[in-house]
Length: 95
Length: 493
Image (cartoon, rainbow over all chains, first blue to last red; front, side, top):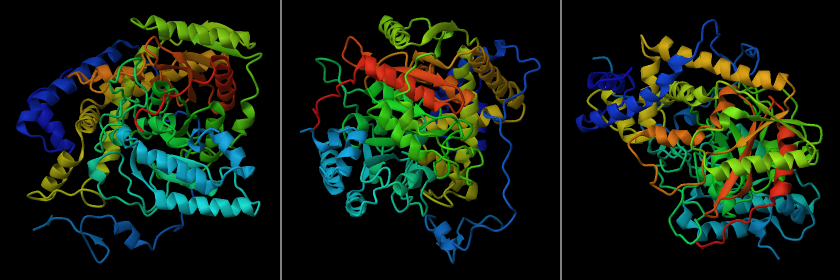
């Protein structure tokens, strides 16, 4: 399988990465090189094989359903580009 | 007398205990060496004030007879580990200005045990690369050069800063991470030892995520013993990482003297890849001979799905990366570039903040997870991963204790030599290491000799799950037989 320019633009949008017009062509080439490389996986017989979900046999650990952290809002927002009163500020979403 | 920064970690530990020198002296020796080695660009940031403060605490502890296991030993930290109050970048512009208010589990255990932090080490952006050429903070230059040449070489990647700093005596040891070979390949390129432990051995909490089902932390150091000492402090159960295993941490250092008598070592015939340089094959044969002479049985084994590991990795890792890196949106930390609306802000921030290789992998990951392609790519790759793991299980079930392979298909290459338009060429560097991540197994890279141009080459040993001890024992046998590689003279200082 290979991707065309429209698909490159669609993937970029899904990934929320702005791509300049002049970069679409080169990206298309690079993505197609990778897709050509992984093509060989089609040759493997995977009939009846379970997809791996965990490399080591382990049960999902669960913890007690209690509050065990928190009360550190100023730590949480300390690295944000824009904040106000311990809230993250973003451009207006709803008119 | 050997300069303090040229001691091994074990020698430094003994010297500090015997009060031959102080923690402050050995910290200062490293800080001076770092200052002189700016040309290598191994450190993104050095933390001299913190180092000296920690060293002073260590000196007090030693004076009171309360020395902890790593008391006063200066280490470098890969800049993928969150360090409280110290700029943490993942080698990316998108984390510009990020100063975590928390400490990664692995680094916190090193400080708990008395180690001293020298600074943060350079890496490929988000640990995606095999040459340390993709860092937004500039390339790291290897301290190694080809005989009679001053062509700058790569230290490997993604833990290139860690490997270069260890090889150039800019720390006694360093933390590193390995998703497809990022500890073992740079260790092989720089004549150092690096171990990727079994998945789950070290907590991933506080390590910036690349591909969560593959990422594991481990040390790079100058000897097998030093790696064993460091892993003993880095490993251990952490309830904050649900994939961290609740198993006791063995005495890894004690394992190095076990030897290989009675062990059976497998040689996988599928690793004899087409076009492999003759000197790599010779080194591999030599390694097998060394283990045989030390009392091991060596026999050929089959790992039939080996060739599919790398392509399957280039589906699984980018898929997980595209999900993990969705968090860099200009809202909670790091860079923000305004746009016409919130989606425009996301798109502009990510376009400006991520480098080319990172964007490429996020886009591949987004594609293989997108509607209509998920089964054909992602699910198929995860099935192949099951087959790869079964290959190893069959080998171990047939009585194999560890597997010997070359660590890399070649010695280090020059900066820019792999800059072709085809990203796959660079990916092939990980052909011998990536299977280990896909199967969650432990793997160690140990220097075994030099190539015709005087560059180090490494051998890799792959173990059973949670049997790092056998790897340390076998790697020590190789280190004993090969002799320690003498690291390059400081042309940069």
